[in-house]
Image (cartoon, rainbow, N blue to C red; front, side, top):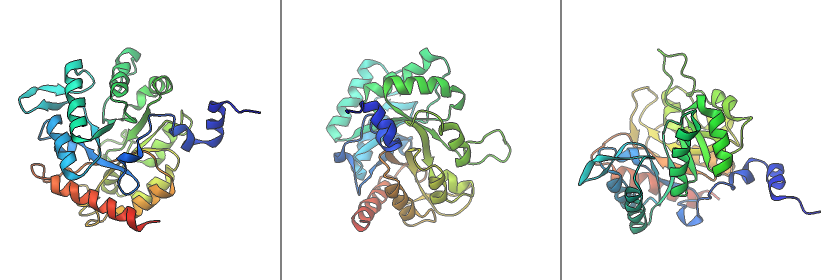
Length: 287
């Protein structure tokens, strides 16, 4: 008896369901993972420059964020899901020129209002993105409806623990798990491992808590275990990047990992390149 594809996917679990979303091509992988830059790394520059800098660092993929300057000669224009068709065409041309694939977008607010939320998903569809990154837990029902319609993954992102705001729970992977575990399998976590360290958590343990639900990763190595820690090239800090990569490999992670280097803002292409080099070398070492 032939099993219908959707039933087969459900039987096989998250790994198969995740492949329903636009897959990231193998040609975009470095060291076995789709590692590139979150454009926020270059937030002192325009999105056009961020694409160029990602290519210069050796990245093959990029994650956009909302509100970045559009171009050096049009800095008053902002690039986000309200971009004009002309702006989108220009960005696509630059991606093609530099050999970079856009794979994710966020952190972006998603409205409970379906018409407003749909703008974000239409933008993602236009770029054939694998995922969207958000913290809009209140819109989970709308998000789930549109995830099913558009076949695009959504990851819930964590910022650091906020001691003065006990209502902020996204820093805690057990809370994120409670949000996503009974939802469509394309809804999960965008694991910001640096913010976990800033929250006093151990990233590999957090990934294990979220196993089967990790959509994408903001991959950071930090200089110290402190709320005020700053980014350093992979392998030179205390975040156990090697262990994180091993755990993602064990979980058969298929999403994107974004370098979000929030330091040395004016001149961090070399830092990003060192991060990509670490991932490339690690992939060669780990069977």
